[in-house]
View 1: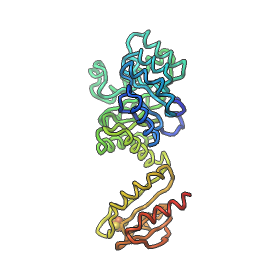
View 2 (view 1 turned 120 degrees about the vertical axis):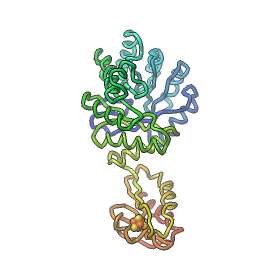
View 3 (view 1 turned 45 degrees about the horizontal axis):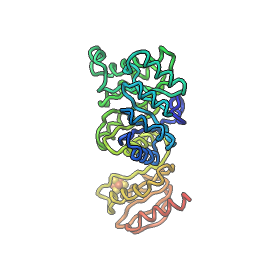
Length: 343
Ligand code: SF4
């Protein structure tokens, strides 16, 4: 188990949710603004790209301005890593094999050791070293062997505050790589499918990749990578965890509708989903069913529900029908019921 700030990762710790800012790190206000929005959305660890000294120099001011643990994402430049460590980051993402001379690597590791800062070794399918590609091709094994090479550097100096990721843009390669890695090491694993795409495609790929691995008991922290506002990543990550019962929270089940549906269930469900967002961390299940024939029965396990009729609907609570409500008042009636119970 390692700790990124106050968030434990690995062992029996809950699977944590990460994201990454996509603002210009040098722009203090917009970066802090995005961190705050991510925090409100439910992000637990935030990663920030530190591409140059100017970006690193924002960190001393940025880190105390938020309660979220900050991980600095650094490529190659050990000086930037040292600056970020000095600024008080909670984690560092850097591949020790890419830092340069042994002396530079040691400097970074010793600075991390002093402050117990974990290092994530992050190997992606797009950045596998040439020698590994030559030996293993674009395979899961290439990802794992690359990661183990970097791990070896840290282990040689007895540094074990390590977290590893082996992300590919292919779902199958990602799954294979993490399965292989999980057999070889006990370090906490950071899961993700890299360059997964836009909200639609990226969500599907991430759910399949991350979800499959989590269902097998592999993985300790997750980052959904989307070409979108990072808040979307948090929404998807939460749903993945809830769907696998790894986290509690609001669940909305709704029927696909069919020829029996006589009210606008699609519109109703979308409206309810938006309005119930404030209850997202409450452990309640709401069912929105198109008809009375199957509705309350199929959704009898839900805490609250609606079953559509002809321009009206039945409001029910844990399988028990409460009253008939006209279609136009259904959303409000459901919200009132949940609100009364929640208070
Ligand atoms: Fe059709 Fe009713 Fe089933 Fe919805 S709950 S799909 S309306 S049968």
